[in-house]
Image (cartoon, rainbow, N blue to C red; front, top):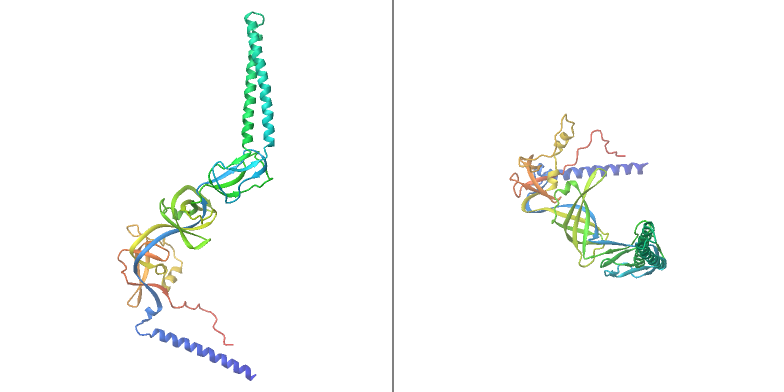
Length: 397
């Protein structure tokens, strides 16, 4: 029992000692020479002069500038495969061969049809000439002559049809050899030897060839709120996960007019042109893009924390319900956006209305002469928030 009482006394002594040290520390802080209560309570930052760069950010995907899908116009079994992933190919180079047996048989059948049609044409030509001679001697009627002329025309048409079928089958036979339409790099191969290629409904894609990986582009999606500040020719910087410590450069090449709407969010495709001389950037990589939309040199600037700061008393007033509300964003007579910062004047917190310009998400440009270089603006309130009424106190045991 005595040990329990002693432990309780020890805990009580420790709590009283800690509370006393906190009070003493607070008094020392408030009584530091040169520090008045207001300066000690609020954290401040100086208005500085410097350079600002405003950017808009989005994610995108790296793609070759020209990507060609190579397909097949005929069906067949892959007999020979000549290229693989990452192979460099030239225009006209053979990529694969399909089994030509079926196409060869169709061509031979068509050639036979041409021979038969040619024989019919020769017979029809001789009959027409013979009938015309007999008609001149009035040995046959006009009707018999017309029939021979019609038979000759039909034989000629049949011969033309058979010849066209031969031309078609020869083309199909040549299409069993798939050639590269462009020079480039094979980035995709979706067939293998022995696989059946079916081209009955549409041409299947067999290979994907990037024409030049030294020139690439990033397809990004920017929100409509940012698209008004983006223009062709603006500089862009981006990073990829494969090289996290390296920044790459590009230029805005195109802003496509076709919008994309997903869950009422409207975005536009912005194409960024990228040079890739080292071929380190690969198709499909995710790029984190920053487009430079504005730059300022030697301007007054303040931390964004100063624009976000609000005194505790004002926060309480803003939290109270009002009968009417006004838009928080204001503009001056010159249409420049406005903001409010707070300074210490005679130990009192004083609001100052300022015109603001561009921002880099850390600092914001200050336009006009409402603030001076070297002037301190409040960025934070160091006083802990007031304890809620009715909150339970600390239990001693």
